[in-house]
Image (cartoon, rainbow, N blue to C red):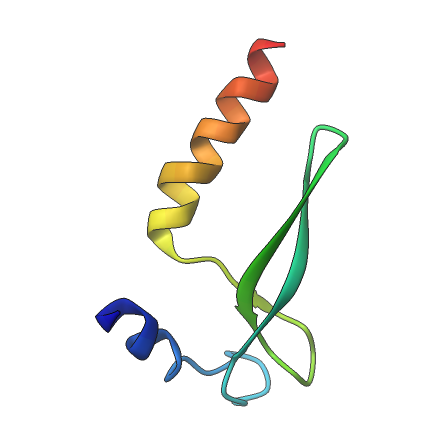
Length: 67
């Protein structure tokens, strides 16, 4: 819950707008994955937390590359 609160204070590096939760489709090796992430309401820049990038996404990459 503390991590969720700190993410609400993240601003877009380009627009300086506060990021808001929204639906995002991630694509990798021809597969699409719908997820909820924080993104800029103005330019659409998406924030991917380090834990997601080095944890879950890394596991998905490894599984897809093994196929």
